[in-house]
Length: 349
Image 1 (cartoon, rainbow, N blue to C red):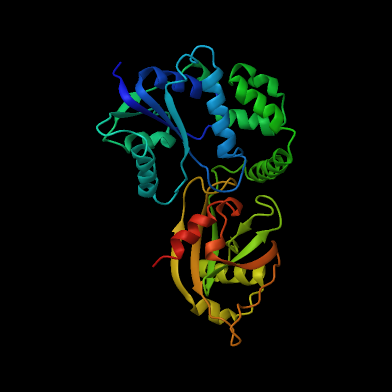
Image 2 (cartoon, rainbow, N blue to C red):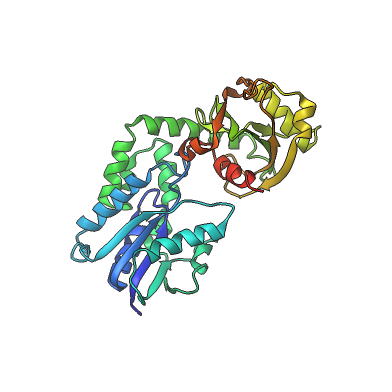
């Protein structure tokens, strides 16, 4: 099999399992100079789908490479583990970030290949780097039996983690045992149970439903209006005011109604409606853990009060709090689902 100076392996590693490990072993054998492991989904709040931080995953990967018996003779070969942020509504930005990470590491005129398997739609990124070679990694017996989603299901169902012993590297197995004793595990498990019950309520439908909701991106003097979610999923996280469309209302009316209900913003309804100057649909299939959920975002620019103050707001309905947050102080790790991406997109022209 052809060798390359650099082999790039991209994954979320939530958590690292033996299928991932076998790919890393192959990459170490085929790379003349270095293996570049890019860890995805490092931004946003911790959820059932992405429960582990980048630093936790980086540590597991590095310790596994260092101590795995049949590859430790190779671990001194240069390898790098770097984070890659998600950009669910802009593939070009994501591709550019990958290219930049790799370009910052490799030398001039060095060859590069990406390694992976075209297992489903989530693997389409493997075709986005035509300037690189491609190393096909067929699914092995470990990854055909279990994958990271199955591991997380067992973990958050609070089943015996001893089952993981044969499908995870020791470092991943030991980490999960410790993780189960943390407050973060308890919080995510609570959210998992709420989402499971939510999905069960419509599992008898002949087709999986598609939910329609709205979000209001209300801007004033460099601030955006956010609410703190009062219940799971996303309890305690900051979100845009919004909610699900009622059967008897139009989408625009839903956005204004939910905004008023959740924030009690001290701006007349007709002014809010008349201040809408941009509408955009956000429909990434995986944007919500609750199921297929499409949101219509409405940008609303409002003015300061005659006294030069931000309009008064107060959390109500599903919102524990409502607050004006300066745009430069937004913390993506504390913002619900894809709402940070929505804000980023909506504040442009």
